[in-house]
Image (cartoon, rainbow, N blue to C red; front, top):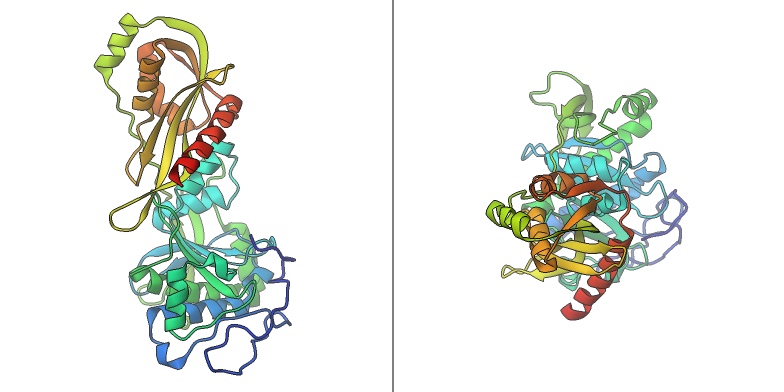
Length: 402
């Protein structure tokens, strides 16, 4: 996390970010030589060079000086028509950059993650696990993967300084964070360009900024209702809105309504015949369990070279803290918490009288199984015994994965 004072990168860094062989001094940003990216002419038309140039324009603009991370900036790509919802990073002085949340599932993510909905700790972890976004932040060399460093050098770029490196990332549900590739590189470049123009307009138009701050609408309870967001879209075909000129052509700023879509996939199916058998044959004991489906900070490498993120279903006896069982799910497919709970019951050899859950969606998913087995489901904001078991399990999995 990059620390600062909320007005921009806080430590002057000199003589960095030059193209090879250049004696050009660092650009001044926010009144100090605090860093930048420099583009060589021969690579100006390359997608990555365009992305770096767009990032430098945005960084020089420093829109975090007047914009918070919420409300979002609606962006409609003039090439593909894809919609993004941009959040400006930096007003809190902790991280500087831009994240653009992609499409309806991205809108779900930005509403839950940035708008500060009332989430339990487990729900917050789930939201982070399912973000769909492209973005970048200002960081240091050790935050940039070696293949990207080689690419930057090959394109003729040089970076130095604690806040001199652009750290580009792609977040996709079911996968660990990775650098953007393919068409995402050009898409992110265009979105950064649009966000810069949008931010400038909000800086220079007080009435529009007040309207943007006060008329943005979203579901602040569950985050699933329609959102009304001021959006920058191509002028061609737009029936209304305020005209705006961007480096990508003429556009308009207009209010549009969007519907979030949850990327969280859960499979509620279970072996009903086995559940009926357990109800007949297994004793029901006056014991309580804590049960949850949790993201795990480990990854599974795919044959294509990507890394699946992992979720773990975990069952713990209350108050002994004894781990009944755990079940791992990797990749973008749906997890099956009901099937996992049934497996844990088989392992334990008895049916608990009560099972506590924290996530609302997991509770809904296992509710039919609980009814079939005569289990009382109890919602809890915190699961202290499961928290402790989860930390131990993660430590074990990380050691085993080394």
